[in-house]
Length: 452
Picture 1 (cartoon, rainbow, N blue to C red):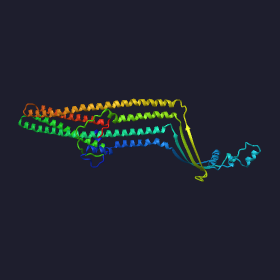
Picture 2: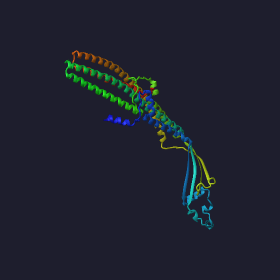
Picture 3: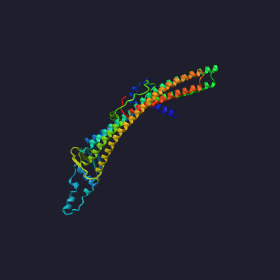
Picture 4: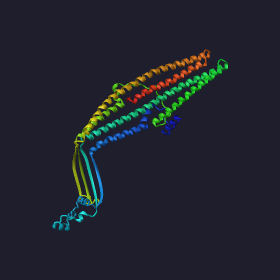
């Protein structure tokens, strides 16, 4: 049931057009890199990191803001400020009218001008453009830019790892199909031998040299062999479905590879140079170094410049040049004390850097050990393959020998079928052993860049 659901699921992801026929591995890898959906997603992730890596450096150019404010108020302070900003303030706005002057002349300094305290509501439209730019940040912009760029470099390695994983799966599927195709061929030969044995036993039953039970045993054995053949063909179909899913392209057939992949044995230097995880760890170490300097930057002042140009009036864009204004300035800010927070953050960044150094060394040792283990396992399995191939050859010869003895009445049909079962067992084990060998070889490609 699960197998059927899997086949249905991936069939929807594959275009319903004519499939690739006699597809070569090299061409399949080209299609993989162009059409595989996981690789496309990894590529998008990396592209986003590339764009993000440019953001810190853009801060160097500062920022320009344009604002347009529309206000109306009868607040005395606001109305007076509006007129002043619009360059329209008059003495009357300060309350200097005839009544006020008369009161002052009489010594009444407590007089409250009504027009000053209760002005008419006024519209105010303020249009301005402002520019702010950092002049000195203690190196923070440079460091943020460096860290962002290194994060982008890490994302490219992550993408390469995804590509390597998909290449591994594609190569292994090609070799799996080749193995199962050859397995089907050998299994078909054995099935033909069983059918030949069935014909021999039928004749011997007719002539009285064998009993009907012998024939039934052979037929039951033939049914088992055919069941294995059906299962092998189903496995081949699943492999083709999975290959089509990886390539996002229907694949009808492939050009068979060799049964076993070549084993590459990298040197220690190649491991440290080409390991994806070690490369990421080294970039991570550089990031922690930048982080230390970033915390040191907190001990320096920050200096910035700003400029502003605008115009204000009670009518929008009215007499813009006559009522314009500008402001320019420089501001420096320097934190002198914040409860030792900067010092503690610097210590923390240094410790993180030392920790990452240790992790890099551990990663180098761990990856080197992993590579050696895979190589050792692959070489051990390779010896098992040679042994299984020899056992299969002997099992086939022994079967033929036992068949000849059965014809002469020297042994029972059960003895013959036992040897045939042994041949089937060794054939299946050989398939599994070769498959395990290829898995170890290709797993190296997900750790070390080996090329195609």
